[in-house]
Length: 144
Image 1: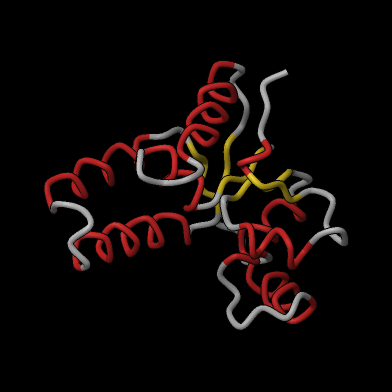
Image 2: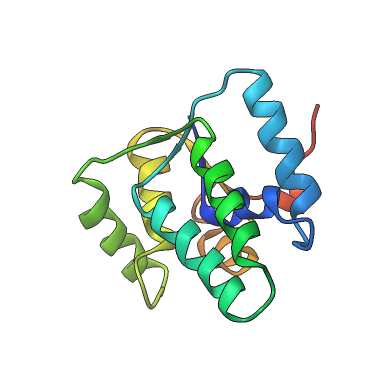
């Protein structure tokens, strides 16, 4: 199981993002191999919120945001809606000194369901490694 967070999904859609090429390559690779892509329910809200912020700050047109949201929501990412995610996410946020339990929801899904988490959030990767060996920076993705 591969858990992807909103930063990976958005980077794959937005050429202006530093991780664009890596995120696009990774998603194409995983989809071609029929890998199971997953995320917590938070993914959809984060995608919507980030796109809205880009429109609000005039970095993206509303029509482009609408299209990118539809494209993102059509990706075959299974939403894992299990209540065990939330207490584990809270514990992980405390363990790694995170002010909020958003990023740790993705980590909780990876941990609880024996998956790996890919993110473009370098700060989060630094915060949880080397303790978590199942969290990877999408910028390090290489097709073997």
